[in-house]
Image 1 (cartoon, rainbow, N blue to C red):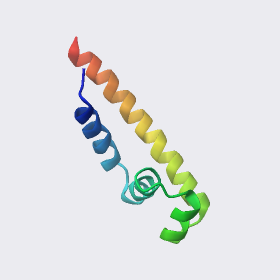
Image 2 (cartoon, rainbow, N blue to C red; image 1 turned 120 degrees about the horizontal axis):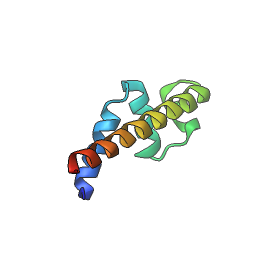
Image 3 (tube, one colour; image 1 turned 90 degrees about the horizontal axis):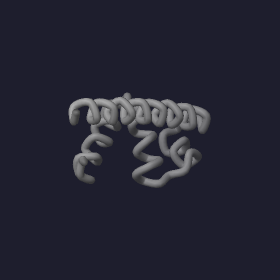
Length: 77
């Protein structure tokens, strides 16, 4: 079983793989706790752009983490 630190490193690498703008929006939301409206105001973009970028970021992270999970199971066999 992977440790908390190992899992955090995997998540951090997944976040780092996001395009720069999407990564910034994701971090503002999840790490700084800003609302979509606050992010839009801070970055001078529309709230719909924030929502769309968050949807894409979450879909990518879900896919990335699912792939990593399968990989970890396979290498442990």
